[in-house]
Amino acid sequence: MLEFRKDYFADERRDDLDVIGKGVQRQDMLGHVTGTTTFFDDHKMAGMGHLKVLRSPHHHARIRHIDVSQAERSPGVRRVIRGADVPRNLNTLLGLIGFGKDDEPSLATTKVRYRGEPIVAVVADSERLAHEALARVRVDYDPLPAVFDVEEALKPGAPTVNDVYPGNAFEYHDRFDHQRVRFGDVEAGFRSADHVLEQRYQMSPIEQAPTETNGSIAAPETNGRFVVYTPTQGLFFSLDTCAKILDVESNALHFVGGTAGGGFGGKVDSLTEPLAILGAMLTGRPVRYVLGREEEMQFGGPRSGERIVIKDGLMRDGRIVARKVTVWFDSGAYTRLTSYGAVKCAAHVPGPYTIPAVHGDFYCVFTNRTPATAMRGFGVTGVDFALECQMDKLAALAGMDPMEFRILNAYRDGDMKAHRREAKNTALVECVQVAAEKARWPIREEFRRASSRTGGGGERARIPPTPKDTSPPKRTAGGSTYTPSVAPPPASSWDRPAASPPATPFQERFAMPPPPPAPMPRPASSQPPAPPPPEPADRREPPPPAAPGPGTTRFSSVFGTRRR
Image 1 (cartoon, rainbow, N blue to C red):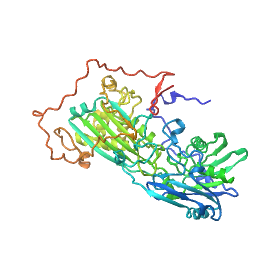
Image 2: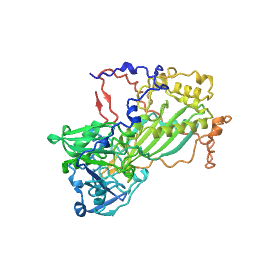
Image 3: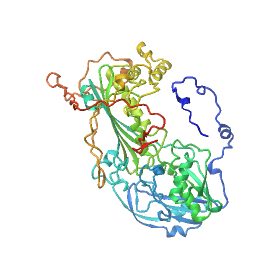
Image 4: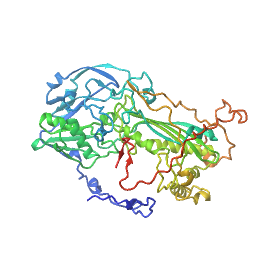
């Protein structure tokens, strides 16, 4: 019986763990160092066919005609497979849990949306014969305009990349074109701040580059079943995905996992298993489908590129009073897992810091690039890098040590998060203290004595009045509407400069650029900052949420529904 013991995780600050720093032998170490570990490609079967795929040379094009007649007559060819041969030729990975619409074909039929998209598969007696047959396939294309920039893809008149999402943005709950976080009044926070800093960050796509590329071997068993040897990182996820695409019962498939020769998130997409099984179904013999290195780079999904804009309101004493974050995730031509990455990103902002006003917009955008997927912390890693870069810049702007600046703004137990959840088991203060100690980075006594257990709650636990958003996400008949709300900011900007204390050693190493010379800030006496709008008389401050008890209904951030 599987039992989840909450008491194991009751105190996440436990310091008595005994693995790090000790020589612990991995369970699979002996097989690796002796060369006896079995990988999926070690299964050799008599009469095995080899499947290879013809891929699009265009980023975006309409398919006018496909001629496979010469390929079918090529020596050693057992079967040519086209999109019409796939029982359900549209899929999305998270469709198994009802999240998103089926949008990616196993084999393209009418249009290709990124360079490298599969069009025709050939099963032959050898890899060489399969490649020779593919060279005889003739495809006529009408090239179409392509779009590669996330903000350009959302503008009116941009080429439609994904016909399932005509506005080039993933639709959450079939209604909204992006994820949102709203907590407090950020505009009032910016008006009250002594400094306002806005910065733009760009993260490139990252390929997982496993030593072993994606691949699988499928073979007929008795009673109409098929066995599949695969290095997938999600065995039952891949099994159910294949059952859906091939329109068979899941018990007709016998998946055998094993050691993955590197994955890092890149082996959750079921890139080869559906066609390998279909090839075995159509030929009645074992079929091996393994990506070459170029295919792995071109067809295997990377972590998505991310564009991140962060705007912060900062007080002279170093407190962050407002944070606005806009993130565009480049999903490539299809959804795969990027839509979930945007949800994770929304759940992570504003980072592990108590900020009384937070505003976030998170878009999953379609472009004519390789579809993106999971890769080690996707959805969080990129924005976390940007947030911490921003924290260093803010510390320099406030004239503070960056370690002390983080301790000042870190969550304390009892603080209210921007997602209206109470912070518990917080430990950033202690982490920074230990990091400073190990790095021999001097911090002042008051920060060395700070604790995550004290100073939280009270006023910091209050849910602030949050203005109603006057521009809710909309959909038009053609898809999502989008009005760029974030212009490229200057290198740095602030409303009212404060008298700066002497530069710290950190500031000297990471100097901020000087403020732009024009326009000059107006004297406060002649143009006072606009006061925040008055609150309606009937507005009541909402009470803090009660801690959920057993059986309490909880909110699902993915589906927008309540669950037990």
